[in-house]
Amino acid sequence: MESFAPNNTPFPPLIAAKDGSNFTYASLHDRVPHILTDVINDFYAAIQSRTDSDEAVAEGKQLTSALSRLKHEMVTDKLLTPLEEDGVGDTAKWNSWLAKYFPQATWYSAPFLVWEPYLYRRIAMIFKRSQYWNTYDFFASRKKNTFIASMVAVAKLCARVDKLTRECLEDPSTTKLHLAFIEMLQASLWGNQTDLSMFPDLSNERLKEMQAQISSGENNSKIVSNDTDKIWSIVSRISKGRVDIVLDNSGFELLQDVLLAHWLVSVGIARQIVFHPKRIPWYVSDVTNQDFYWLINALQDPQSVGASGLSSSDEAVLKSLGNQWSSLLASNVWVLKDELFWTGPYGYHYLPSEGSDTWMELVNADCVIFKGDLNYRKLIYDLQWPVSTPFIDAIGPIATDPNAPAVVSLRTAKCDTIVGVDPQRARELFALRKDWMYSGEYGVIQLSPGRWN
Image 1: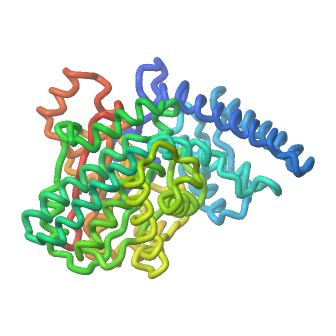
Image 2: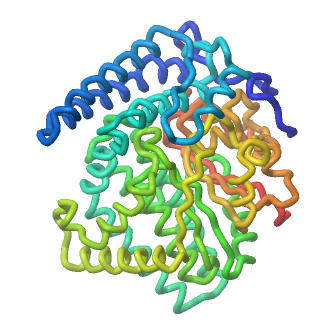
Image 3: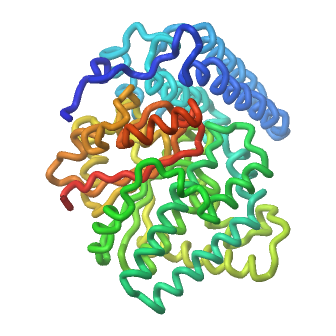
């Protein structure tokens, strides 16, 4: 499918239903205001802990008022107003996009994929324009605490992948590598369930339960569109190539992604992994550069972050992998590139045109793995697609560009848009539960082969 204007889409966008009947409305009316309230409350606690600077406290109170005004704008359906310059580097692009395509948009009239990214960009703007709080990550404590609470499960998973990797090196047969790849790819998919923007009240008990399901493989019957074997047919032909991972959530999901990268490098498929985190705090738990390095440091020294309940063997495997990964970063085998495009206004149809620098970076890869729900929504542009629409058709120009790498999407479904699903399977799922598209319990592994076709 050819590209289209953001305000003139081939199928209707997701917009909050006036009768309150859809997931978009529930998100705008309940879930996202809850998240913003949590940001305000957590920031209030951070302000109270600043005993070193009266000026920082006074400015913090002003920022709290700005966050409260933003919440009021959202719940009272005001216009989406232009961003103020904050030094991030994309303000002009955001404002020109709003003025050109959505000049009179309000929160409840704007498409989901307009107001939700705009909200997180507005939150970042409030902090970036400040003097004392411009590097403050308003989601950091939540991201770290959920990971620390699950450190025993983290150690068990690391031990499993370390063992699997050594087995592949001892027996590098195609069958062994293929089976290991399936396990690693599916673990990376289900790691996407631990998403604090979707489940802001995720308890430690529920987190451990989800992690156990991921590790056991019991979720894999819930993959409703699965191109794993097609992906392997491409990956198995890559030798000392480059694989990019466009990251989603920090913590346990990031660990799954890093373990996949560890395996790809260790068995010789990849000579380089390029990770693409966010440059600013985003969608509660999305990975920033700081989150990535924090995870490595946490594994190298679990006690320094307050981890408890670890055995000596747990600590040994964590420290071993943490040290290996630190060396991979130091030697540029692993690289981080936090392009601004990922937190910009455009969907990924527009990568070749509006994100050309980022696209030219991605075409250097053999395969690009897009993680998570938001990346998927930006790939297919968050429309009311017929569920049987081929993934390749839905992602448009980045599938048909002659230089395109293989594009892989690993997504647990948390929004009511999806493609590449057999219509009969979709009917069965709707009969089973009406919220299957956004329950976070079903997933897709989908491929556009790009130049490997």
